[in-house]
Length: 506
Image (cartoon, rainbow, N blue to C red; front, top):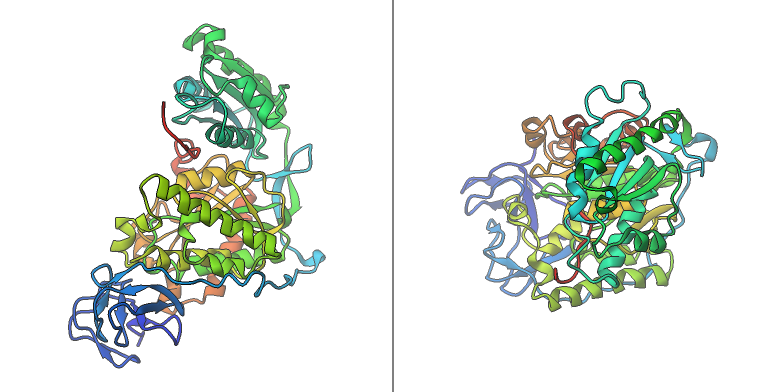
């Protein structure tokens, strides 16, 4: 008979319910009886916890009791809250050289090699916008390539229009503009785009000339720019934009898939709509996949700085150098200062959906979130949308909001995304394909059109973390080789382009 709860560490004073526990339910192996209803994915105390004392899960502090907790009590927002405590960063203490797979045994996939040696997983043309004012015209241009318009160009996956909500009403120089330009520049250079048209209005703060200079971009046959005002309005712009992209199509179509090493993969790691199972099933399984990818020479990118808060010490201990560990801590300090200045706090996370799924504090959520990063050394820390050049496991500073975070990762060069979810996030991120990993089987069955892998068997005892990790790694290689994801089949990926917007809207 399957156990009713999951114990994550012998030192924990809570366990996680695998099913709804009704009052009076005896918990086998824990010598406790549920004193009230404990929903699936939520925590039940296995030992008394005095008011003010720490509650431990994963053998880590996830918060402090706001009232005395008795064995068998449901532990959640009514009796558990954040609190300050010292964290030992112990830079590099757990950093170990990665045991690489011998080169002749390393995994491969069928990728698209670009002239500069980079490898793509998809082959799109893109219409990027400097400002929200050009977003509709960009969409009109892309719509002209729907249906049978690309029948003669079977190697082109489509034309993608990426509009956004900023680009004006902001200072023409400074951090906010730097972030926006770095993001657009990263997409303009992305390996999954064979050609790009950058479209502006003409009078915006984010001028095309300034963008091109700041990002070192130069016009050519596969990188064109234009503005609506200079072209003569929307209708003329759409006609001209379509004509320019049609000129790019023959060259874009010449690419062919070929066998390439998995070292060309840059895998973005995301979690959204997390629940009490996220840190038990999908995130550790994705972490196992990450360890495999790194051992095969690839790169994996953990992000969402507010959602590693309270668990950052587990990453600094894996840093390859004190400088890398200190770079991560500096990003944490920046966020503490930023949220204080804007009247917020780091524990404005988890979301209501996270809490309904069993997560109580950002500490608990973060401990589960970092499991996506596996166990190998932390090789580098990047700021938002910076180009990712290091191999291995790396970190990029981003907000916790999934579309903004993933946008930064893809701008940095990520050519595939794995996204875990317990509540049921729906997501895509063109030009990078996105795989959705369900933390529990009921979610997978309920939203099967959106979910690519069911990680629920880990909680049910039907599969190990390593076994599911191997399934994820296999699907990553298949997806990189051209297999369509569920979100691609549904058409997701254009509206989710969301650059990080800082500062006042003027």
